[in-house]
Image (tube, rainbow over all chains, first blue to last red; front, side, top):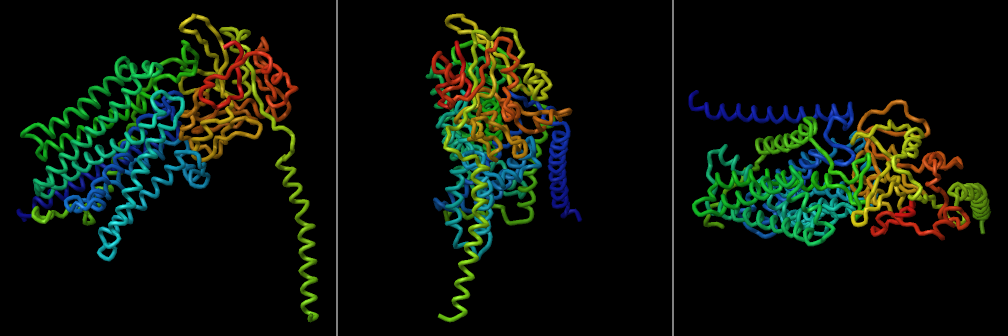
Length: 393
Length: 236
């Protein structure tokens, strides 16, 4: 009896964790019910800040869902066995986060009951409409990819399926970046650097999520990660974090150089209250500098350091999106360049936004969905990476 | 040729003739219903004389609210289809007051980005939202360079039957399309005490608005964006 107790304890822990996640999902659904009943008035969103916290959560998860597939691509397209063993887990995480992110996005609509209209009425010039296709095809593609990897008879097709997923996720993240880069009149957006920036950012966020889940699985099963694999994956995370930071720096430098954009940059980087604070402390320091130290400092970079660094990258990602999405809208539209403007509709004024509990719960509800899919998936199917001895690599 | 074949040919001829006679009026009526004429298309527009627009006067806004059943409240979550903007040239200090509403662009970004096609432009240039197709994603509000659109944040009561609105959908100035279709002028143009809002068909060379934009200097707001708004401003 005594020898069974660790197993029983873990079993209980599993049910406890999934129950907590299910409760969070329920709380999110209850928030949706409240928003349905009272309207978006119970959120902090308004006619100036039209996209808020739900969009920060949704876009984070969708971007990370695309990036996490890097792990599978490196395995199947670039033939690295260490990554190949991890490809199924990456596929599961991708689907889980895509499901979580899209749920949040759909339930935040003013009329979520009309979601079917998005499928029956299709405006070909709309980036959103393209994304409906990109997201649903992504789901299907990853599902087929998982099938080719996990079903022995389908394995000959695995490489092809992996390649389709590899190409499609570039299109998907480009589509997400294009949502913003096609906005002609907003100072924060309307830049061609945004799609590639989102692609590189997705690599960093996706790999960070993968690291955390992988660490948790290994910890849970009392295994230690092969040192060679750990080192490679840690260095890859560092590289992605640096590359993402590079794009963000170039984006801001370009804006700083244009006289018409200087006021906006001043708002985001210095004078805008919560936004510069989140940008510098949240994104730059917590999301980039500290993780890089944890990864590269001599003597550090062990598994637990990388796990902490990954959590920081994710928190930095949320800070970045808050500044990018909400800060970008808070800065007033330039309807009359060169004029001081005031009106009853907030023209010329910084938009105010304070997130409320329902929208925060909706966001976490999406994370809960992603967690549940991942946890149950790993429990019932064979997603745990099968370690290949180092000499075989 | 056998008797049967001749009969069959005759039958085919007769039925094709009958089909043509049956369909022709329908095709003709279909064409009529779509109003296909060779005449120049209508483009409704407005010319706003800012020199006459008095600071502090809100009559156009009030008339719009009454006509369209808006509450008139000005919280950040309330709908404002038309608003008065006070602008001051930073380098010269010159102050101007003007009404701002949907500019009814020829190339409206809101229509481009709308995933379901709920945002659309009528043949006569009026940009509208189909309240039955709008899913409330607010992408059009992100795309509009004029901040012309509002999202209905709360349940609505006592609506004007001529102007259906809906909670959870986006809305904006309709140029009082329900009045225009009855041959009337938009409520704001009628209400302006200084007759600062001139409404008419920009494409009719004999209309007052077309003659005026031909002879006096007027400008479109954010003309650099190339959207060709149907609302023009004098004295900007």
